[in-house]
Amino acid sequence: MNPAEPSIDTVVYVASSGDGTIGSYRLDRQSEKLIPLATTEAAENVMPLAISPDKQFLYAAIRSDPLRVLSYRIDSNSGELTPLGSGALYGSMAYIATDRSGRYLLAASYGGNLVSVSPIDGNGVAGDATQTLETGSRAHAILTTPDNRHVLATNLGDDRLAQFYFADGALAPNDPPAAETAAGAGPRHFVFSPDGRVVYVLGEFDATVTTFALNADDGTLTQVSVCQGLPDTLELAPGMPREEIPAGDDTPRIWAADLHITPDGHYLYLSERTSSTLSTLRADPESGKLQYVANQPTVKQPRGFEIDPAGRYLVAAGELSDHLSLYRIEPASGELTHVSDAPVGSKTNWVEIVSFG
Image (cartoon, rainbow, N blue to C red):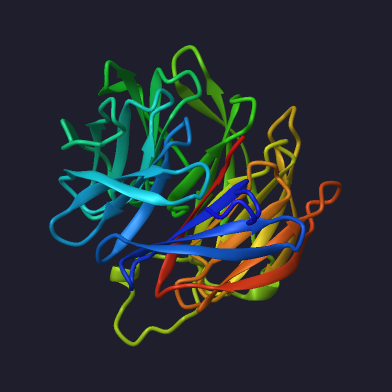
């Protein structure tokens, strides 16, 4: 990087499955713009992404044959990605995440109804998956608990979250093996509250967010409350798996996608693809209960978005949009103010944001 250029502080990475690329952008807080940095070749149908806990590596799951995960080194001075290697995955993975130590990569396969664990070596390269477990129907997301001793994974088709023990890089069913959501919710993505006491779960088919209390000792969940995430004025019918919608049925249905929480734990945001909107929910940090606040238009078919680590900006990507949208988050109200757009590749679906220093 030229010494005269502004230093890299925060970099936004986006996966574009149609182009088979990973785009990178500098988040310029002064101008409130996303400045394109580079486009890195990955492979057809690249989706999803994950960042290592030390921010030194990026992982990208490839959902075209051969199914695999690509590993990249992140240059903290420029944001540049350097390919390091790949490892086999034994399913088309809808979600990947590292464990809290950065030594293992977890993955969940929607089509394969399975989860897996891959070792990450000392050079940051994720190798071939060493454990693949059948789980409930349509696994969609997977994360370790904050203490790294347990793992949770959504099973969208069974309206439940699978609960696992996690030790020495291996998964084993917990007791009980699952926690239930409401029937027909279709649990998809989930996040932990910043203090780790609460898990928020997005229902793809009803756009609710279910609050669960996490028992850190045994890694199990207890349902606390459910909050509706969309206004009735959108007039969307309950969702269902896309592959089960009858031919010729063009009923507008709920199709919620992504969920993220601000670093202070006060606001959650969710995306809904049919209406191409973002919703804002307010969280009570003590009880974990949520309150619906607002809903607003965004990029077309917003499959992925992310909040920057400082909690001041949100970046949204749409699978049918030719641009990213950058929003300022008002700390006192959680209000999203659209500030700028940036060009993007084809079928952009995933966003990760890394701040250095």
